[in-house]
Image 1 (cartoon, one colour):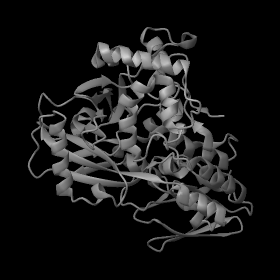
Image 2 (image 1 turned 60 degrees about the vertical axis):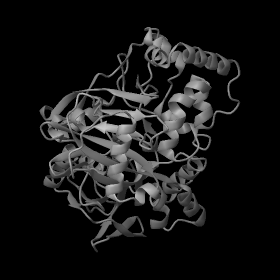
Image 3 (image 1 turned 90 degrees about the horizontal axis):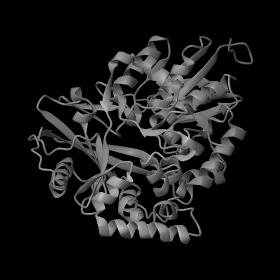
Image 4 (image 1 turned 45 degrees about the vertical axis):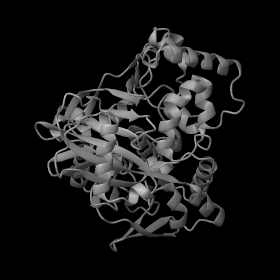
Length: 482
């Protein structure tokens, strides 16, 4: 039985109704002596994992494959949305470069055949040279990747796209992002894996299928929110956090619409950069928060008539510097139920900073740009007249620049010392570029910390060292980074 020190019922406030926030609510709903309430600034649940629905078309903001090496996450998904509601979808992603498509993640034989004999020899030579004389420092993304693939492959397959995403030089982007997303992959390991010579004899394969809600990821989070509210948890949409005060061990919160709440603990997916201000932190912690930066992005959704020339990938990464688009999704390849009969919908993703030229462009200008860039890439499409849509998303990607690591550590340590019952969870909550299942696990372990069920550090949740979408026969489970 879980009670406050004075014998009364406990109360928990959850800030944010994205994957982390709703997972925290899900974990708490079975504890009958804890009253929980969720506040969300948007009018919908799901955060960046929501599904946007406009005029009969539906689209996924970020591209969310429901695949996890954590059995716990898979169990939660199946509880939130019944297993037979998921579709099993084929997995396919490629890189577009120099008019050709390359497998993603990179497969050496495919990549080298597409590059041609001369370029292949140059790439191999570049790799041999970097093994002989590796970069002295590998703290930046550029040096870390070049040390594992050679300078030539790095410039072809990593530099252009990465700088599109982050808007900064890869010399300023820290290697932490590479170690988290690329993991232990290198050209040598990729070649060994291609020929069945993976280290330690483990059998590693890329997943060929993944689960996906029929009507997009938002369907799952909408179902989750309905179930937690049915179980007695309050959910207040369009109620962002406005003010926080602490009295003793209690937090008193007011929302943007004037709702006043009190609780013994807070589970927050609020951007970590904003937390010091809400909690009246000392100057050095406020400055740490101000140093944390985010990258925004926008999606231009272009419904088109089905054409054989349209790719059948879930998405393609666009490494061509001639266009500004970074990635293109085909929503009909995610689920046929998300598009109208005889059509599909392409989602062109542009990585931007709020207030820059693209962000301020009108929807009409952005739709025209998207159609022009599809043509530049050789995709002969037939856009449906007057049917394009634009969605702008703030704070989509936490930036791993030269300041972020020390700033995160400073805020995290201060919170643990001064606010032990304030738990930062999720991607923006921890300023970590997490996948959906990572964010869920931060919430699970934060709640279990509060309940005294585990002492594992929920800030260190991550999956194993292998690429996220590789399935390994000898392992299954999330581990904590040490």
